[in-house]
Image (cartoon, rainbow, N blue to C red; front, side, top):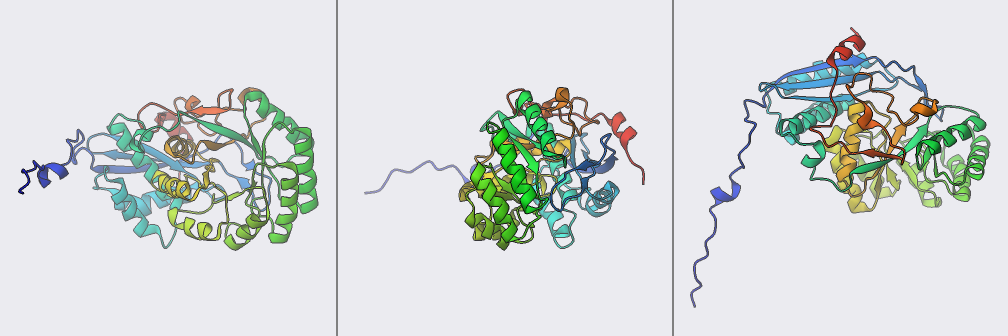
Length: 401
């Protein structure tokens, strides 16, 4: 028996793009600029393992279109002169972006990746990618998290990293200051020798049992020594053991992870979603900490988050980062199923500023990056990343070639 005809929409109707208020001409990239932001803060002594002092100078990237739309991003290279990163943006990436349509971020990211995948410049790509997401969201008058699919949570919990290489008594005071501000967890640097670390972990946990504690050795140990320190972590209930072995030795991380009950974390120095394959195949980490200023920006951060969700792993971004990269992690964490916790660097000891974001002297208002007295960062609701730049201040802080 013949069936009645079905009114099927035409292919043209199915695939016709929705009207776009921002035409291609308005979104054609006209300029890519970069400035070095000299931080008023001195170098930060992380104080753990193989690490050296963190230089908090960053590079700000601004992308402008023919229609006057702008987006901002940033990154830093931590232990190297930031002018190198600025040169990477202007000499390496700018020529690939001029004249391109800023609406098509995956296409632009792929264009950049094909250029840099064999020689680096990942922090430069990250800064540019963050600027592209900010630009597109601002042009649509939406927050970045809306472009990522919407909110799963409207605030992100922050734990306090107290990076100083200090005596245990001073670290106890810093833990108290973090608790008094409202933080619900802290991380301290270790990596000073097996017996020193075991004694430090045991004392911190015994004297402040109510404050969750994570430790980070910055890749200081081989497998045997990492397991010895990890035994103290297991015995005292440490929240996680970060980079017990060098990040380049995934097999060592896997060996430590397999023998400890304390979760092992890392991934802060790895780049792009592709680096996940080896870690996941060896089950080397329980917690992944991509740096949004290095991993490839928001484009890669959201991909990493989706893969981690599928594998039952946790996303806890390494957010010792300049302000726009920091906010990029907040926006992704707001929409990622496996997100909800991020790092917060505390280079100041003053109790009145313990939860104030320290690396944003060029922001018109840095309060959206602050931690409230319940230990959370509110996800910004304004267009783009949710903050504005004081360009006069940028020019004051810029470091000339």
